[in-house]
Image (cartoon, rainbow, N blue to C red; front, side, top):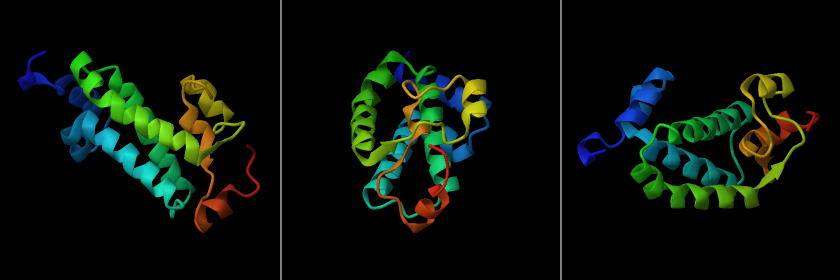
Length: 139
């Protein structure tokens, strides 16, 4: 793939998935940046609620799927940043026994705690909104 076409297949994938125009334009790098920002929020005591956390982990899932549409060059260029963000996330997140979206949704999508670990994790130190929403939930 030439530099002029770099990212086109990822953008096509994002367009087909119904991503916003801004997300399509930013492509794979934008998805990595979004995950890095989410993890930075976690490091500061995640100030948002459960819906926002679910959006963040859905973004991580979209990133994982978009990697499949990326060129080898794109993956090689962004993999170190993604690996660093994931490693940092794992130190800041607590694993749960159940998928945050529920087991039925996990089965439908084929998610599991090994491959799609972000769907089974919550901030160790959530802000008050997320802490309240997580209280009493299975997991």
